[in-house]
Length: 213
Image (cartoon, rainbow, N blue to C red; front, side, top):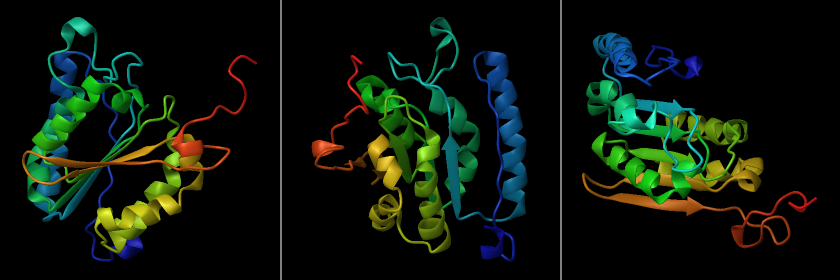
C-alpha cells in the first residue's frame, strides 16, 4: 500500500492482546495508549481500520475475556476504549471481526456487538456467520476493500457488492454481515448470502458430505 501514499499517511500495527485479568487489561491499555499518542502527534488521520481475530465461545458467542466470574464488561469495550481518542479524530472507522459465527448467531452476543459499535462510533463493521469461520477465505474481500475503499475512496456501502463479487470462495463458506452506523442510536444491518441451486440453495449451507458418513 505504501506506493499509494507517497507522502506517508499510512501506518500498520499488529498487537497481540491478553486481557483475561485486570492487570493484563491495564498492560494492554498502557501499550495502546502510547501507540495512540505517537499516531496522534504524527498527523491527522482520516481513517482507521481494525482487524480482530479471536476465539469465540461456541455456546454464548462471547469472545474470550477470562473466566466467567471475572467478566465485567464486553470484549470490544476493553479492546476499543484505548483507541477512542483516535477514532474520534477520524472521519471513517472500520472494524473487521474475523471470528467464528457464534458472535453473530447468538442473539445476546450480537446485541453486545451492536451496542459496542454504537458506543465506540465505528462507521462500518464486517463480520461472518460461519460456525467454524476460516479467516483465509476473507482474503480477497479484504484486498477488494483495500483497493476500493482505502485507495479509491468509495463508500463501503457502494463498494461492498463488488467486493463480494471478488470473493467467490468466501460465499460458499460463510454469510457476511455489513453493519453501518447511521447515527448515534441506530444501525443499518445487511446480511449477504451467496446462493447456488445445488451447492447453496436459498443461501442455506450444505455439507460436503452426509454428516452421518
